[in-house]
Length: 313
Image (cartoon, one colour):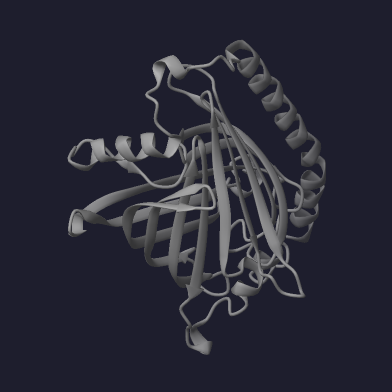
């Protein structure tokens, strides 16, 4: 057994250059695709004179009464190649001190959709939604360990949204939402991570720029049932984000901070770009804490390449 473990470690140390080669090949492949389909030409002639957020709102409404349509919620994407400079093996070492051979390269994907439960809750406004988001991290290229799913986060939520037209500092506060959110990784101890939150979300727009402010409150749990009592120290009490639409390109960001002297935070930068009539390329960069629940107290730096199926705007 010891000999097998030593051999496995030898393979691990020699696998990282191979992972870098995979990343370089992917970069080359996407560069060719981008250059062959690159276009910053003005597409306004094919668009109504509507803001990016208004176009999304109208597109969503078209799906509400269509039983064969799924309404997008958060971005849905697939990143076949992502590179994480510091994989977090610490949680798995609690099960087996030798289970520390995570690859730097893995697949990351997210699916997110919502379903309209009721409308016109107050007068002719107010929409009640149920939503579901799932994010997975798949060690697909780690064949020596049977290519396991390292982490999957499940996030159902229930919320109400109201459309507004309130001007704030030159922006139009277009949507106000509030609801309840549960997020967990569905694991048993000692890998179990979960929390429940009450949240609000304020969406602001100006032309093709959309900003959101999303504060939340963690619902307290009994001390003996709390898998991650200090999660707020790393993920804070909310996040700020936004997206800018520029001729079929979308630039977006997310930032959060715990606003404490022992400072922890995160930033995510995204760029989606056209690769064809129906396919959009996607580059994502993340730095900080809380990329996933199992990594809520671990600082990660990741860059990924892939395609995006549904965006913010």
